[in-house]
Structures are given as structure tokens and as C-alpha cells.
Length: 89
Image 1: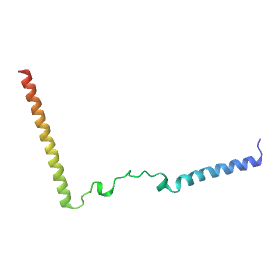
Image 2: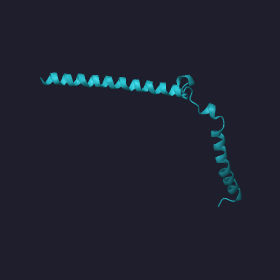
Image 3: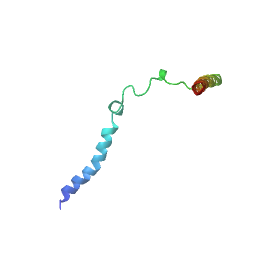
Image 4: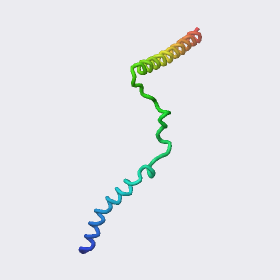
């Protein structure tokens, strides 16, 4: 069909194509495929508490927040029940 030169060319292509592909996509990754501003700045992220007092303080803050939301929800439900009762009367 093609001859030995074609086989050598195909072999070279089969070997060089993956190497060229890895070289193109493997070099200079930080500049080529980076999106500026994708990750938040370290000062804008959540700080994980490691000390016992910090953990207890964070748990207390979350507990207060949950109870405030619950109280607001119960107030809204009471108002809705009151409005329904007035509408039925």
C-alpha cells in the first residue's frame, strides 16, 4: 500500500501527537488556564475555629441565629393564623 516511509511517518505521528498534546496543555498552566478573581481572597473566606473557646463561641452564635429565625418564623405563623381567623369571622 504505502511503503516503509508511510509507516515511519505514522509511527512518528502516533508517538509525537500525545507528547505534543501533553506539552501544550502541561506547560504554563497558571497563566493559560487561570481565571482572575475566581477564588475569594483569604481575608474574605470563613475562618475555621481551632481553639476550644472559639468553637464554643461559634456554636453559641449559630444557636442564637437559629433561635432568632425560629422566633421570626413562629411570629409570622401566628400572624397568618390570626389573619385567617379574622377572615373566617
